[in-house]
Length: 416
Image (cartoon, rainbow, N blue to C red):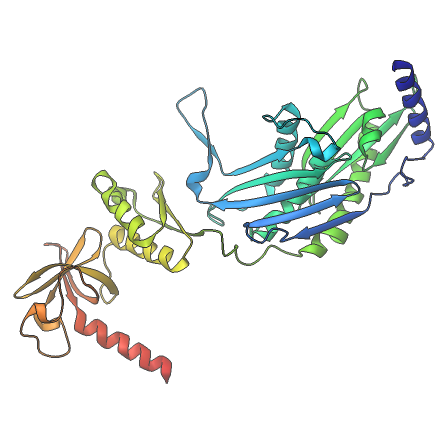
């Protein structure tokens, strides 16, 4: 077996050095390429990238910032990672039937490379307040699956509506050297056999303007400046070709909106000294808002608030409630509140958790009201307009009559 291996290695290396590749390609020629987005309709984003016999399907999932991975350190400070990439290399991708076990060193390394290649182009939390998880499934492998994962990740992110700064593509460059000589030759987009018998796997991920990640595997003592320069030149040309001719033709730009199945994220900021009011005693206030609006709310120590929910209208309602609690109700604004108390002189209405106001009996309806109970009952939800706020006593004067009149006027204006 060893003799056959050495003979194979000698013949393959000699052929490659002469510019003869096993699949008939030229030294600087890339295997047939294809890319597609929206392959899986139910997920938040998906991209399928094919290079020769190598095919990678990447799925993107969007979640609230609280879903970011928490990383324990040696000190008390806990770090978090909002962008996570998982690389799976099942045995069937190379025609084997091995049992599926936990990720090995290879899977972790390839996943880390694809992850680092996309990090520089990701939007900030303020621009896109989501946690991002990508999973690359290798469907078929004949070399360069990590580079396929980079391309697949770009496609999936753009399909998911993530406003990345620039698309990223990955490509590899191989090397054959002559023993006891400075002579060498490089080839772009190496496949499995060329990687196995070659001296180098020079992996480069980048955009039109620059490089975002590099990983080099070598079987020689080192690389000369000439080898490195040629590898960079060849991978740059190949990378630009993949971006312009393949990937950007599948999806020219990130989608304007996230998937209908993805959570809708909104954010606001409250004064730090108001965080306690928003959370409430034992978390009662924030839990009540979450339950009423069917959303998830995350508050950071700096006062930034992130609201996520499937329904955008509910998320906006939650944001309005949080802003009202933190900044106080706005005079002239209309709120939908719940009747919490009924008196002979009017009704108390909670416009947001922890903020109540009085609707005097004379402001309950357009018509004269004899009894408060004739118009509202305990637990009713009604629209009210903030008429006056007494900052000293903390009293809020509300009016249902004025709210109804204003809403009717708005409706009439739209109809006209």
